[in-house]
Amino acid sequence: MRVIILAGGRGTRLAEETTVIPKPMVQIGGKPMLWHIMNSYARQGFSDFLIATGYLAEVIEKWTSSLTENWKVATQFTGLETQTGGRLKQCVLASSGDRFLATYGDGLANVHIPGLLAAHKEGRFIATLTAVRPPARFGVVEISNGRVSHFGEKLQADSGWINGGFFVLDKAISDYVHSDDEPFESGALPRLSDEGKLGAYEHFGFWKPMDTLREKMEFQELASQPLWPWLNVVDETKH
Image (spheres, rainbow, N blue to C red):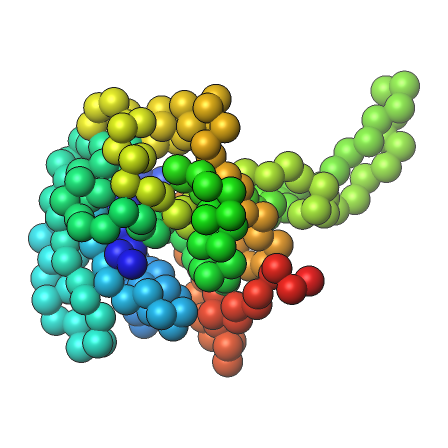
């Protein structure tokens, strides 16, 4: 099954790194983020990749041409200004097969891909996303009559679910993307949800995006651990 990776954005919130390389090529522990994403899929048996490129596409194309891993890797230039919906649609239409995996090029998680696939098939959805709890960043303040009655660290479990990426998509997803300049998140996904054709796989394990320099440095610290947390995959359906 082909894995589509969205790697064409400009990454402006990580401008310290992305003036000369696209964000998926930012290095974590001596390897590009893109390599870590691909490696996490390949370790679960999915090693056929199509990388949707745009901004500084030549950097990714040069890197993929020098890979020594036993992966099948192709790139597709999807335009400089194309939004996520358009990039996905172009890659789906350019690929054979009726079902795909897809993710963003700027985050890692220890999602159990076979469990995600099983949930998608069982629900008979056109698309299934991985729902995650956002990392807790701020202290929670409880107020009573103008006074702070409690101040403490916000627990991740207290937060609502958000789209963590790591999708399963049927070929029919292309019918729900109406143009290249339409974000997947505000176009196709709400349309699918309105029709009851969008599934959610609840993921309770590791998930982390890399949007800022601070998050990049946090990834560097995690990469110094003997076992990278995004590779510590557990079948959550058994818990």
